[in-house]
Length: 416
Image 1 (cartoon, rainbow, N blue to C red):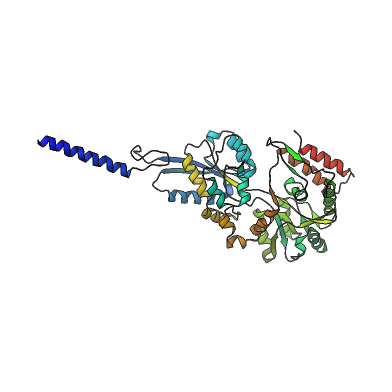
Image 2 (image 1 turned 90 degrees about the horizontal axis):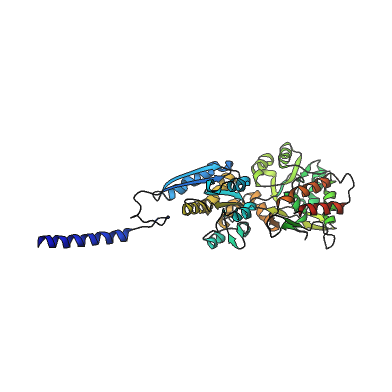
């Protein structure tokens, strides 16, 4: 009798015990329950980013580990890897690559085509948080493949308020007039097709990728329409002949800013601190000006670009990698990125903040964004444009027919 009662009691006790375990049971990111896990899950992640971002990224990683403390045994390592080479390094061995990585948006198509990126799961939520051009940069065929991080890979105008008025800065004619009158220079790098796009971008002449994602189409040599290719060529020759103009590389531009020979130039946010240090309270920034073409004024265009955060489709810890990618790109950490690195945010809330509006460089870039186009060109775009532009900068010294030069440029840009 006692044995029966004891057995019944033990049975009830066991039933209650297991019911209690069921109620307390939790599921972790791997899909396993506490009953299945006898030890804390070990999560190893490698993060790639620019060397200059080392301090920032380590701070973000530390805050991520604090946020999820106790949920896993984190082993997260940051490794410096340039964003412009990220694609090539990653595709050299996807399974050995970083779990989370920073890359320039023009590498998105190749990474997605190689299977390195899976579509973002909570795409609508990410879209709502970020500027439309940054979302577009992370999108292929209406599928979001990466997390927007910055929206500042573009260019605009720096100018010295001591020499150039707010009215003059609206037109390239006004800027060149101020520069030549003061024995100074306005500079722009015509050796780089990235900047030369400015003269063609808003004219109705077009360049871009074909459906194969590799080769280009180009109508910059067009001979009919309101603006023709030869009109752009003649406009560039006129600018090049002005004593207030010089084609300078980015390094030469900054040297001129510091020694006082340059009072205006086209560059990006990466030079904002150095320009401010050189010109002090006279440092100004604005969208690109208009330029004279075919008897009228044309707004200068620009290529734009973004930095994105990708999650390796071959990551052994994909759920945690996704959480980390979202953490790196959230509002708080994009604000921190601006404070520590001066990089322009893609997050709408940060872009609309007072801090951003107080940054002349970022404000100018955002203003120029309305006249910008994502850089979507194949590798054969760069050299032909540079060759053409440098000959315009030199004043076409051999007197080559302009239309022939335009035809040659367009043919080489579009070569298979």
